[in-house]
Image 1 (cartoon, rainbow over the protein chains, first blue to last red):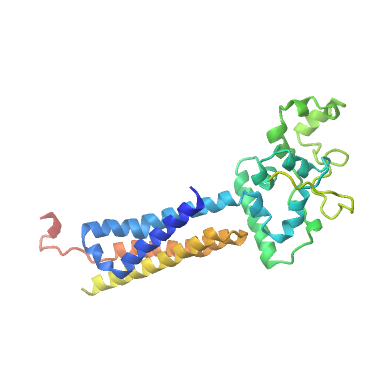
Image 2 (cartoon, rainbow over the protein chains, first blue to last red):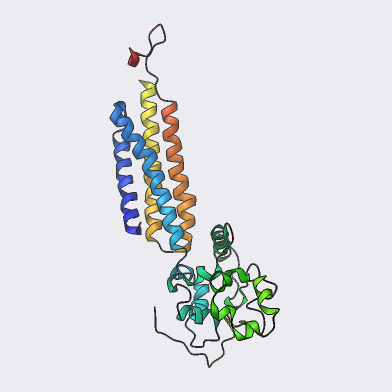
Length: 209
Length: 77
Protein backbone atom coordinates (compact mmCIF):
# COMPACT_ATOMS: atom_id res chain seq x y z
CA UNK A 1 0.00 0.00 0.00
CA UNK A 2 1.51 3.40 -0.89
CA UNK A 3 2.49 5.67 1.97
CA UNK A 4 -0.05 8.34 1.07
CA UNK A 5 -2.89 5.79 1.24
CA UNK A 6 -1.79 4.73 4.72
CA UNK A 7 -1.53 8.35 5.86
CA UNK A 8 -5.10 8.94 4.61
CA UNK A 9 -6.28 5.79 6.42
CA UNK A 10 -4.56 6.90 9.63
CA UNK A 11 -6.08 10.39 9.46
CA UNK A 12 -9.50 8.94 8.66
CA UNK A 13 -9.20 6.66 11.70
CA UNK A 14 -8.23 9.66 13.84
CA UNK A 15 -11.27 11.63 12.65
CA UNK A 16 -13.60 8.72 13.46
CA UNK A 17 -11.97 8.36 16.87
CA UNK A 18 -12.63 12.07 17.31
CA UNK A 19 -16.34 11.40 16.81
CA UNK A 20 -16.22 8.86 19.65
CA UNK A 21 -14.48 11.40 21.87
CA UNK A 22 -17.11 14.06 21.19
CA UNK A 23 -20.13 11.71 21.31
CA UNK A 24 -19.33 8.68 23.48
CA UNK A 25 -23.04 8.30 24.21
CA UNK A 26 -23.64 6.84 20.75
CA UNK A 27 -22.32 3.54 22.11
CA UNK A 28 -25.68 3.08 23.87
CA UNK A 29 -27.18 1.66 20.68
CA UNK A 30 -26.07 -1.62 19.11
CA UNK A 31 -24.87 0.19 15.96
CA UNK A 32 -22.90 2.60 18.15
CA UNK A 33 -21.19 -0.31 19.90
CA UNK A 34 -20.19 -1.84 16.57
CA UNK A 35 -18.92 1.57 15.41
CA UNK A 36 -16.92 1.98 18.63
CA UNK A 37 -15.35 -1.45 18.14
CA UNK A 38 -14.32 -0.53 14.60
CA UNK A 39 -13.11 2.94 15.50
CA UNK A 40 -11.34 2.29 18.80
CA UNK A 41 -10.12 -1.25 18.23
CA UNK A 42 -9.95 -2.45 14.66
CA UNK A 43 -8.98 0.71 12.75
CA UNK A 44 -6.18 1.89 15.09
CA UNK A 45 -4.59 -1.57 15.18
CA UNK A 46 -4.95 -2.01 11.42
CA UNK A 47 -3.46 1.45 10.81
CA UNK A 48 -0.57 0.66 13.16
CA UNK A 49 0.24 -2.64 11.45
CA UNK A 50 -0.04 -1.04 8.00
CA UNK A 51 2.22 1.83 9.09
CA UNK A 52 4.82 -0.49 10.58
CA UNK A 53 4.82 -2.65 7.46
CA UNK A 54 5.30 0.47 5.34
CA UNK A 55 8.23 1.60 7.50
CA UNK A 56 9.80 -1.86 7.33
CA UNK A 57 9.64 -1.78 3.53
CA UNK A 58 11.01 1.76 3.43
CA UNK A 59 13.92 0.73 5.64
CA UNK A 60 15.14 -1.52 2.81
CA UNK A 61 15.69 1.41 0.45
CA UNK A 62 19.12 2.75 -0.41
CA UNK A 63 17.89 6.29 0.30
CA UNK A 64 16.86 5.24 3.81
CA UNK A 65 20.32 3.80 4.62
CA UNK A 66 22.03 6.87 3.23
CA UNK A 67 19.81 9.29 5.16
CA UNK A 68 22.27 9.09 8.08
CA UNK A 69 25.12 11.38 7.14
CA UNK A 70 27.72 8.94 8.48
CA UNK A 71 26.76 6.75 5.51
CA UNK A 72 27.50 9.49 2.95
CA UNK A 73 30.88 8.04 2.01
CA UNK A 74 29.40 4.58 1.59
CA UNK A 75 26.74 6.02 -0.70
CA UNK A 76 29.43 7.83 -2.63
CA UNK A 77 31.41 4.61 -2.97
CA UNK A 78 28.57 3.17 -5.05
CA UNK A 79 29.40 5.73 -7.76
CA UNK A 80 33.15 5.13 -7.99
CA UNK A 81 34.16 4.76 -11.61
CA UNK A 82 36.28 1.66 -11.13
CA UNK A 83 34.99 -1.90 -11.69
CA UNK A 84 37.41 -3.29 -9.10
CA UNK A 85 35.24 -1.69 -6.41
CA UNK A 86 32.83 -4.51 -5.63
CA UNK A 87 29.96 -2.42 -4.27
CA UNK A 88 30.19 0.10 -7.12
CA UNK A 89 30.30 -2.61 -9.80
CA UNK A 90 27.22 -4.31 -8.34
CA UNK A 91 25.31 -1.04 -7.97
CA UNK A 92 26.17 0.50 -11.32
CA UNK A 93 25.53 -2.69 -13.31
CA UNK A 94 22.28 -3.39 -11.46
CA UNK A 95 23.52 -6.74 -10.20
CA UNK A 96 21.61 -5.63 -7.15
CA UNK A 97 18.42 -3.51 -7.29
CA UNK A 98 19.72 0.06 -7.22
CA UNK A 99 16.93 1.20 -4.91
CA UNK A 100 17.68 -1.56 -2.37
CA UNK A 101 21.43 -1.87 -2.88
CA UNK A 102 22.56 -1.78 0.77
CA UNK A 103 19.87 -4.16 2.00
CA UNK A 104 20.43 -6.70 -0.79
CA UNK A 105 24.05 -7.34 0.18
CA UNK A 106 23.87 -6.62 3.91
CA UNK A 107 20.83 -8.67 4.80
CA UNK A 108 21.18 -12.20 6.00
CA UNK A 109 19.75 -14.85 3.67
CA UNK A 110 19.29 -17.38 6.44
CA UNK A 111 16.12 -17.94 8.49
CA UNK A 112 15.09 -14.75 10.33
CA UNK A 113 17.66 -12.88 8.22
CA UNK A 114 15.40 -9.91 7.66
CA UNK A 115 14.63 -9.77 11.37
CA UNK A 116 18.35 -9.85 12.22
CA UNK A 117 19.02 -7.12 9.66
CA UNK A 118 16.37 -4.91 11.29
CA UNK A 119 17.80 -5.64 14.72
CA UNK A 120 21.21 -4.58 13.41
CA UNK A 121 19.57 -1.40 12.11
CA UNK A 122 18.22 -0.63 15.58
CA UNK A 123 21.73 -1.05 16.95
CA UNK A 124 22.95 1.46 14.35
CA UNK A 125 20.29 3.91 15.55
CA UNK A 126 21.39 3.41 19.14
CA UNK A 127 25.01 4.16 18.25
CA UNK A 128 24.02 7.05 15.97
CA UNK A 129 21.92 8.89 18.55
CA UNK A 130 23.26 7.79 21.93
CA UNK A 131 26.91 6.79 21.54
CA UNK A 132 30.01 8.35 20.12
CA UNK A 133 29.86 7.87 16.38
CA UNK A 134 32.90 6.27 14.76
CA UNK A 135 34.51 7.80 11.72
CA UNK A 136 33.07 6.39 8.47
CA UNK A 137 36.34 4.55 7.70
CA UNK A 138 36.29 2.94 11.17
CA UNK A 139 32.90 1.31 10.70
CA UNK A 140 33.22 -2.46 10.77
CA UNK A 141 30.77 -5.27 10.08
CA UNK A 142 29.26 -6.90 13.17
CA UNK A 143 30.53 -10.26 11.92
CA UNK A 144 32.65 -11.35 8.94
CA UNK A 145 30.78 -11.19 5.63
CA UNK A 146 29.29 -14.61 4.97
CA UNK A 147 29.69 -16.04 1.44
CA UNK A 148 26.06 -17.16 1.71
CA UNK A 149 25.03 -13.59 0.94
CA UNK A 150 27.04 -13.61 -2.32
CA UNK A 151 26.06 -17.16 -3.25
CA UNK A 152 22.39 -16.27 -2.87
CA UNK A 153 22.72 -14.80 -6.38
CA UNK A 154 26.00 -16.18 -7.75
CA UNK A 155 25.63 -19.86 -6.95
CA UNK A 156 24.96 -21.71 -10.18
CA UNK A 157 25.81 -18.71 -12.35
CA UNK A 158 28.17 -19.63 -15.17
CA UNK A 159 30.52 -16.72 -14.51
CA UNK A 160 30.93 -17.96 -10.94
CA UNK A 161 30.99 -21.73 -11.51
CA UNK A 162 33.31 -21.58 -14.54
CA UNK A 163 35.33 -18.50 -13.60
CA UNK A 164 39.01 -19.02 -14.37
CA UNK A 165 40.26 -17.91 -10.96
CA UNK A 166 37.59 -19.89 -9.13
CA UNK A 167 38.72 -23.05 -10.94
CA UNK A 168 42.50 -22.48 -10.98
CA UNK A 169 42.75 -24.71 -7.95
CA UNK A 170 40.17 -27.52 -7.60
CA UNK A 171 39.92 -26.78 -3.87
CA UNK A 172 38.90 -23.15 -4.36
CA UNK A 173 35.28 -23.53 -5.45
CA UNK A 174 34.33 -25.97 -2.64
CA UNK A 175 36.09 -23.69 -0.15
CA UNK A 176 34.08 -20.70 -1.34
CA UNK A 177 30.83 -22.65 -1.22
CA UNK A 178 31.50 -23.87 2.31
CA UNK A 179 32.47 -20.35 3.43
CA UNK A 180 35.97 -21.42 4.47
CA UNK A 181 37.45 -19.07 1.87
CA UNK A 182 35.82 -15.65 1.96
CA UNK A 183 34.84 -13.98 -1.31
CA UNK A 184 36.15 -10.69 0.11
CA UNK A 185 39.40 -12.15 1.40
CA UNK A 186 42.70 -10.54 0.52
CA UNK A 187 43.70 -10.94 -3.10
CA UNK A 188 40.15 -11.82 -4.21
CA UNK A 189 37.25 -9.32 -4.14
CA UNK A 190 38.82 -7.36 -1.30
CA UNK A 191 38.07 -3.86 -2.60
CA UNK A 192 34.48 -3.31 -1.49
CA UNK A 193 33.72 0.24 -0.26
CA UNK A 194 37.26 1.10 0.87
CA UNK A 195 36.07 4.28 2.52
CA UNK A 196 38.99 6.40 3.67
CA UNK A 197 41.42 4.79 1.23
CA UNK A 198 40.29 6.25 -2.08
CA UNK A 199 43.20 8.56 -2.71
CA UNK A 200 43.07 11.57 -5.03
CA UNK A 201 42.75 9.76 -8.33
CA UNK A 202 39.40 8.13 -7.74
CA UNK A 203 36.71 9.20 -10.21
CA UNK A 204 32.96 9.01 -9.90
CA UNK A 205 30.30 7.91 -12.36
CA UNK A 206 27.23 10.11 -12.07
CA UNK A 207 25.00 8.28 -14.54
CA UNK A 208 22.19 5.83 -13.81
CA UNK A 209 19.74 6.23 -10.97
CA UNK B 1 -25.87 6.41 35.80
CA UNK B 2 -22.52 6.96 37.43
CA UNK B 3 -21.09 3.81 35.82
CA UNK B 4 -22.36 4.98 32.41
CA UNK B 5 -20.54 8.26 32.96
CA UNK B 6 -17.33 6.48 33.88
CA UNK B 7 -17.65 4.31 30.77
CA UNK B 8 -18.10 7.42 28.63
CA UNK B 9 -15.06 8.93 30.29
CA UNK B 10 -13.00 5.82 29.54
CA UNK B 11 -14.19 5.85 25.93
CA UNK B 12 -13.19 9.50 25.66
CA UNK B 13 -9.72 8.86 27.07
CA UNK B 14 -9.35 5.80 24.86
CA UNK B 15 -10.31 7.88 21.82
CA UNK B 16 -7.91 10.68 22.75
CA UNK B 17 -5.04 8.20 23.18
CA UNK B 18 -5.87 6.61 19.83
CA UNK B 19 -6.02 10.02 18.12
CA UNK B 20 -2.64 11.12 19.51
CA UNK B 21 -1.12 7.75 18.59
CA UNK B 22 -2.54 7.94 15.07
CA UNK B 23 -1.28 11.51 14.61
CA UNK B 24 2.20 10.41 15.78
CA UNK B 25 2.01 7.56 13.26
CA UNK B 26 0.96 9.92 10.45
CA UNK B 27 3.87 12.24 11.25
CA UNK B 28 6.31 9.32 11.28
CA UNK B 29 5.07 8.11 7.91
CA UNK B 30 5.83 11.44 6.27
CA UNK B 31 9.08 11.94 8.22
CA UNK B 32 11.72 10.01 6.27
CA UNK B 33 14.32 9.53 8.98
CA UNK B 34 15.51 6.25 10.50
CA UNK B 35 14.38 7.38 13.96
CA UNK B 36 10.82 7.66 12.62
CA UNK B 37 10.33 3.90 12.84
CA UNK B 38 11.38 3.84 16.48
CA UNK B 39 9.09 6.77 17.31
CA UNK B 40 6.25 5.09 15.43
CA UNK B 41 6.62 1.84 17.35
CA UNK B 42 7.59 3.14 20.78
CA UNK B 43 5.38 6.24 21.02
CA UNK B 44 2.64 5.77 18.41
CA UNK B 45 2.32 2.05 19.07
CA UNK B 46 2.27 2.55 22.84
CA UNK B 47 -0.42 5.26 22.66
CA UNK B 48 -2.59 3.26 20.27
CA UNK B 49 -2.07 0.12 22.36
CA UNK B 50 -3.05 1.95 25.53
CA UNK B 51 -6.13 3.39 23.81
CA UNK B 52 -7.20 -0.05 22.62
CA UNK B 53 -6.60 -1.63 26.03
CA UNK B 54 -8.58 1.11 27.75
CA UNK B 55 -11.41 0.60 25.26
CA UNK B 56 -11.43 -3.13 25.98
CA UNK B 57 -11.36 -2.41 29.71
CA UNK B 58 -14.30 -0.04 29.36
CA UNK B 59 -16.23 -2.87 27.67
CA UNK B 60 -15.69 -5.39 30.45
CA UNK B 61 -16.13 -2.88 33.26
CA UNK B 62 -19.13 -1.14 31.72
CA UNK B 63 -22.68 -1.11 33.18
CA UNK B 64 -24.38 -4.50 33.11
CA UNK B 65 -27.91 -4.98 31.90
CA UNK B 66 -30.48 -4.84 34.68
CA UNK B 67 -31.76 -8.28 35.58
CA UNK B 68 -35.02 -9.40 37.15
CA UNK B 69 -35.38 -11.44 40.29
CA UNK B 70 -34.87 -14.75 38.44
CA UNK B 71 -31.55 -13.51 37.06
CA UNK B 72 -32.71 -13.45 33.41
CA UNK B 73 -31.48 -10.46 31.46
CA UNK B 74 -34.20 -8.12 30.25
CA UNK B 75 -32.80 -8.35 26.76
CA UNK B 76 -33.61 -12.03 26.63
CA UNK B 77 -37.20 -11.73 27.77
